[in-house]
Amino acid sequence: MSNAIKSRQLEPLSKLILEPKASQTIYAVFTPSVTKRPSIQGKLRKFDSKILMELETVEKMDHPLKELTVTAKICRSIMDLAQKNINFGNIQPYDQRAKTMVINNLSEVPLAYNIRKTGKMSSLDLKISKEDRMGIIRPYRNRVIGK
Image 1 (tube, rainbow, N blue to C red):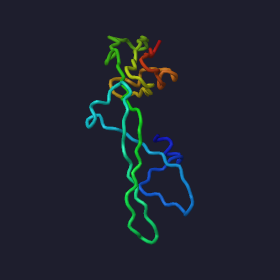
Image 2: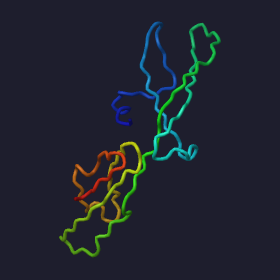
Image 3: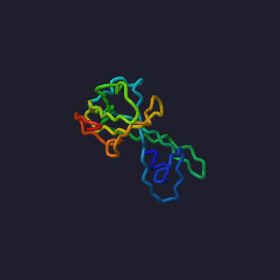
Image 4: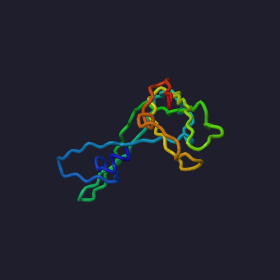
């Protein structure tokens, strides 16, 4: 989404101005808050929401709010890492060791992931292949990183 906004394929806006008889496709992004809706878990659930629209005209006439009901199925992507830390033990200079990490998708929807190095604790010395750095894991599946 952020890439589409940066490349100007999508534009965030709060007001849309149209010429008479014109039409425009509008994409609305809804990001539910887990703290406000704790029932949103790894299983798809039906969700209804309303979008309120107000029509403004040049004549400044009073127009009632228009209500658009949107029905969707939503859920939360849940990722589980089999291990939170990777310990390589004592390593001498120029020694090499390989370890694997397993990412589990515990939800009904695909899980997109992106592995970034923090720059702390020698993370810059880690070598992760390009195909393992980012990807999508199918629902209820896992992916082994560093095989």
